[in-house]
Structures are given as C-alpha cells and as structure tokens.
Amino acid sequence: MRLDKKHMLFITGLAGLMVLLWVLFPPVISGRDMEERGPSTAIAAHWIFSKDYIQSGTITGKDLVMKDVSGNANHLRLINLEGSNQKHPFIRWSEEDYEQKDEVQTLQFNHNKSDAGGQYFQTSKNAPLNHNRFKNGYTIEVLFKLPKKFSPKDHGGMGIMSRGGQRSNLSVSAYKQVHWASHPLNLQRTETDWSLALDSEEDWYHVAVVNDGKNTSIYVNGEADFRHSTAEMTGIDLVKGKGWYVGASEKENKADALFAGNLQEIRIANRSLPKEDWLIQHKPGDHVKNGSNQYQSLRTKKKNYSFLFVPDPQKTVRYKPEIFKEQMRWISKRYERLNIAMTAFLGDMVDQSDSLEEWVHSSTSVGILDKIKAPYVTIAGNHDYGKGDPYLKYYGSGRFSDKSYYKDSSPTGYSSYSIIKAGSYHYLFLSLDMEHMKKDIPWAKKVLKSHPKTPTILLSHQILDMEGVTPMETERGTLAWDELVHPFNQVFMTVNGHHHGSIHRMKQNAAGNPVLQMLVDYQSSYHGGNGWMRFAEFDEVDEMILFKTYSPWVDKLPRPQKTYFDVAYLTGVRDQFKVPFDFEERFDFVDQ
Image (cartoon, rainbow, N blue to C red; front, side, top):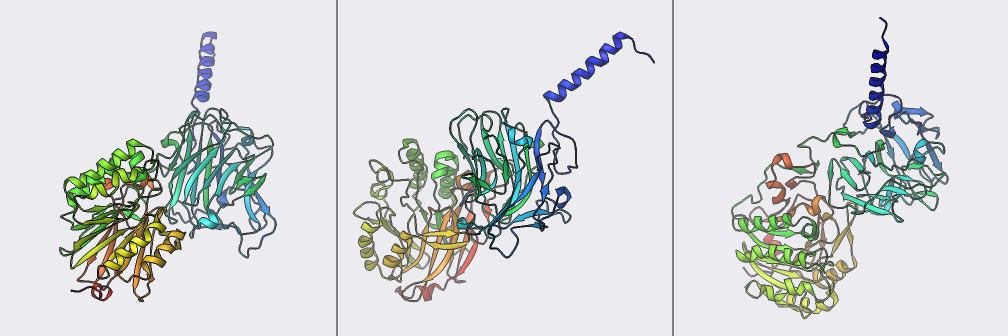
C-alpha cells in the first residue's frame, strides 16, 4: 500500500514524538534480572559482582575485569597493590548474597588497615563515567555486607567507592555509619551526609544515595534518617584524568582505606530515581534480623521488679521529640503495673547545651514522671555542659527536693545518690558525673563507706566502651573502677551510655565477687535510638536478672507505618540476655 504525503508526515511526526518522549522519560532497567543490553540514558554505570558478569581475566590471575552491564563501557579492572603480607587472598568469590540464592556469587573483600598491599577496582582512563558531572542529580545504589568481625580499628572509614581527586567518597565509619562526602559543582567545599548506624554484621544492606539536583539523602534498606546535610548541592565535581575507585577511598592520589565485606552490586544513575525503580523493592514487614515485633512480657513473674535504663536521649530530644515524650508517657502509665522501681537516665539529656528549646522539651517530657511521682534519677553527659550550667538548672538537686528517695548531691552539684526499696532489698543508685569525676570521687567514697550494706548500682555517662564486639576500658571507667567499684563490694553493677553500641561483661572485684558492667547507647541508630530502653528484671526466686530492650514508640506504630528498622524488641545477644545472680550470696553483706 502506498502512503500519500499526508500520511507520511503523520508517521514522521509520530516517530519524532516517540523519540522526544524517550529522551524526556528514559527507561530504567532493573539490575535484578539484568542481561547484557545496550546503553541506557538513565543508568551511567552498573556492576554486578558475580562470575556471570566477568569481562575478562580471573581473580587468581590478578587480571580480573568486571563488565559494566549498563552498556556504557565503564568496565572495572582489578588493581593489585604491592607489598602483600597476607596468606589468604584479599578478594575471593563468595556464595553469600542479598537474596540468599544458591546460584548467585558475590565478591568478598578481606582487608585490614594494618595489611600491606591489597586489591580494589578502578575505571579505565577513557571510561565515560569519569567525565560525568551529574548536573541533573544522581542515584548511587550499593548492595553490600559488613565483615563478620567488624572492627573500628581495622575497618573504620573503609571506602566502598570514591571518585578520584577526592571529589566524592562513600565509606563506612568506625560506628558503622555510611558517609557520603561529595564536592558539589555549586560549592567550594565538601559536604557530608550520614546514615544511621548499621548495627548488624549479619544483615545485607541496600544503600541508596539520592540527589535530586539540590538535596541529598542516604537511604538504608529503603529508609532515610535525619542525618543529612541541609546544603543545596548540584552534581559532583571531578578532576580531569581521574577515574572511580570501587572498594577503596583515595588519599594523596593513592588508594586508601580498602573495603572489607561483601559487594554484590553497584549502580549509578544520571538522575534521582523513585523507590519503585531501585534495585531492591523493600517490602512492608521486613525488619532487622536481631529484632522482633512479637509481644514479649517485660515482667515474667508477679514478684519480680525492674530497673529501667534510658540511654542517651539527645538525638530524639533534638530531632524526634515525640519519641522521647512517648517514652515518658509509657513509663508513667506502666511503672506500677510492671513494678519498675527506678528509671535511670544515662546522660546527654539534650544534644545542644545552648538550645533552650531542647532543655525545655527534655525537662517537660521528664516532668510527666514528676506528675505521677514515678521514681527516676539522672546524670549529665558531655552534651549537657554549657555556659551557666544548664544541667544544674533543669536537673540539679532542686528538681529532686520533694523526692524522698533522693538523698544528697556532691559539692559540684553534678553527682548524687538515691536509695529505693525493691523486692527484698534497698538499692543505692550512685550517679557519678563524668566531667567532675575526679572532684566528686572523695564525696562518692564517703557515700559508699556510709552504706556498706546497701547493694549499689553505679551510673556514669562514660565507663565502658567497645571495640567491635569486645568490651573496652576507658580512662574514666578505669578511674571509677579503681576508686569506687573494685574496693567496694556492695557495687554489683555499672551502667553507662556515651559510646554508641550495646555490650556487657562480668568483672571481679577485690572481694572476688562479680560486677556486671553494661554499655547501652542507641543514639546512632534509626531515629536517634527509636525509643529503645533497657529493662533489668530482677528475679530473686530463680536467681536471675533478665535484660530486654524495648521501644514503646515502635510498639505503638501501626503496622503499615513500620519500617525495616522499626522493631519493638531488640533481640540480639547484646540486647536481650540473662545473667545468673544468686542474690543471697552476692548480697551476703546485707542484714536480712
């Protein structure tokens, strides 16, 4: 059939319209079922670290090249640093993958900062990605897993990927937070965005760095937090002749801070992608492995009683005040039913000591406990000190003048002690200030000498730290132990915050008796701790102390609103555990 001129013009115009639509709304190709395809105008580079996507070479031959499956020829070649002193390979194939499919491989990187040598990947000098400034925004996605034994010393600051010339760097901090440090085109400085802390080495993580042409956010498993720069940022600057590193950062024109863990996939898009076009579609109801939303009893026996520890509320007070207020409301309504004999705050009652708004919110929220006369004690943290001693204004001895359990404060006003009846015993809570510790120790010794038969819990903002999954001494913690814990047998527990993480240990005092030391701090987790609090349930009959970590805030959230990180109970071995405790034997100094 012959077409007349009118029909030809129509077909030509229609074809032109289709081309225009293709340019304005380029298709997004998902990487989950990606096969080799032609170039995409949306995807700048895409690497899948599996044997199926090798361009050439092998790991053993140290000449491996990974294919850019976007079709844009940004292939990655393996770079081998000299001076290796490691018996095992730095990079090897692994059967571990995000979706736990047997047929999928990933690349496992085995680097420590102390190692000589190492391996990483780099784009070639003529790779198109090297010249892309991402003026219209970008989306960088990474599927990765932390090393099984993450160590801040060995792995803190390790690079996932970076742009040469120190123009951008996606890395993991010592606290397992993802950092995106980029030098945008519109600024004469580098801006840094942070994610929440990746608390589990068992989980795979999907990280998405999304810039819409102005603002940048970091998403972890589909969720962003408040930790991001408010600066407007356009694109990513570059240095001519520099490529991209994968599995390393750059420092002084050299690869630095090599990656440890598993890499499965990295994809870079030329614009911000909506969540439905991401590599991973996060399903409602998915949550961290070391957490649960199934009900757990916080009081397992009627005669049991609990002490409740509220870790550093600084970030919730500043960024999510509704969470802190909900914690206080929940305690006020349930402290009698659950027989919570004392609630102890572990310091950092605010994040910015010069913020009147934070102090007012912190104070009024805790004031909910005052109204119903629920017992509580506080201690200052490093964020609470400031001009005019604001902590003493809001949480000094004057606040506790009408509370019979509150006994006295130190000459500095920052340390104090309280005594509360719970179960078969009276317990002394000794709150030792971190900043004035040396000044207050003589006063604290007098308190302990005056109460040798009262079981004592020592609270201070900084005592115990952690290195990976190992408890670690701090200078203040050692001082407190030497002066107040080791010599005084009645001190059977110490609790502190300050250092993000959760860990505990048993240590022997001068009398040969055990002292439980516990660090509880979730400030770098989702929503600044997401309302998690540590319960210590004392069971005198079964000679046990049961520890659980619970968030009334998350428990109250409707199921459709719960994110990957919203679990009411943290169930990892460092957050939920039991300690055998023979009360009569440990407290044999008490007159019954």
